[in-house]
Image (cartoon, rainbow, N blue to C red; front, side, top):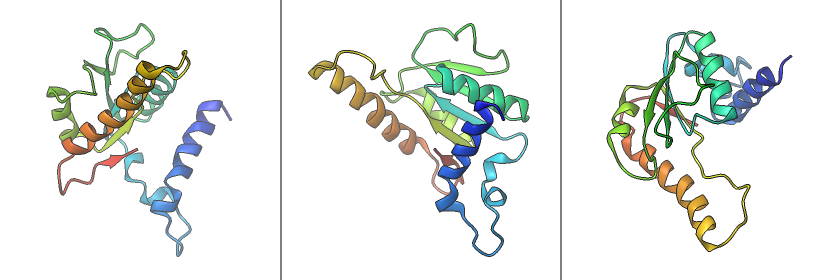
Length: 148
């Protein structure tokens, strides 16, 4: 088993409590984003985890859109990925994409591997909290979009 397979299984386990069906003992049956050809959006998807998830989802037949703060996609970003350059801490046109997705995976966040001071603490906080608020705000009421 590769480390990515282990990561995918860990991701499934995160949803176990929410989607557990005690009668059938079948977790995967209720995780709808494992269907083929689902549109998925990943915020902060240019890093190691986001890239590996993109590769895996594309291999499984899903369409992937990545939102990142860099003006251009990274060289290691798969060509099949639609890339949107945007600051997810601010409201913008990038939020319109969420209405068309079955799953949103929020990986956005300033790196914690730096010297911590008041400025970096605020950046770390805002990059996670504001992005999450903007994602949730953009989710269409009544749509069954899964947010992870």
